[in-house]
Length: 427
Image (cartoon, rainbow, N blue to C red; front, side, top):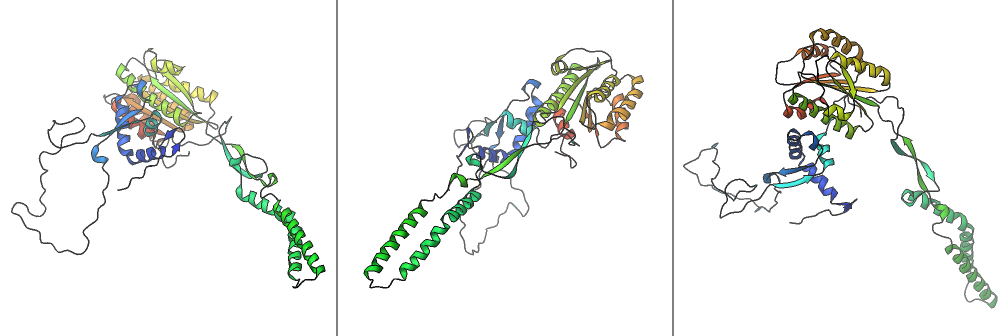
């Protein structure tokens, strides 16, 4: 059997094409390993690469062989043990175990599972595959440093990799025709004149023949002196740099840090927001992220304070919702920005605050946001905030999603469900 391996250099890495083909072939196993790794890792290790194990049964190659050919008639002997449809038991024993499992054997051979390492970039690519912010609309831009290049005709200046070969050869041919046209016409006339001379030639005709041949040789030399391609002929593809529209978006991250939030629940909430933060930074480099923590009062904080500050207190959810409404009004006009909100809580809220939360959500937030997600964390029964949001969701089903999470193992599947690509997604 012949094996063909592509070892062409790609940038600084060898066999990049082969690696991409391999990752595509074992995408299912890699995605499962990435999902398991995300569930098991702590926040600080979330962005690292991962060792992927491919079971040996999945890396077997197909084998092609030649059949005996022709038409054969065979009579198979019967048996006394089995009838049609019986399932045959698996043979006992076998080859020595691989993968470090099973008992060692003094006979037979085995094969370990195939283990390889994926990079940080590949790990994040599989982690956030097929995810996107829903309902993204390209709104007015205040600034943009993203550009694309478009063909804008032909130029006589440029670098070699922009050369238009067809236009260059056409220009060269036109120049040679223009500069040598009269000389070629005269040379054709002289050749006809030379052919008209009939042997034997007189002395006068002999002299005339020599003069014609000299003139033909001179014209041929002048035509051959014309360069095949001149600097004048060079034509280049002209490409212009055009600003590429990119959407303006802001994500509000709201985390409940009240006393009812145990440390385990807070860690689960932080895990959700850290996944969200990595996702936004990787896929939407220009998105603004606003971090808001709340107990009885809400405060806008930086990333470090959001994830690691230990302040706590009572629970008034409306304080965070009111702050979002104020920030939107002051800094993020809905007609210019795609507004997203993600909220994590244990669902506990002061009963007298429910009416104000309903008013803020239905009148000042949901009508202006592209997508609002809420996760309620903990194994307890649904709390006050969950019931409130379930009622609100009936009127805002297109841009409002809720989900319940029990512990860390539920975060990644729920995250993928909340931000999976939808049919109405605009990229």
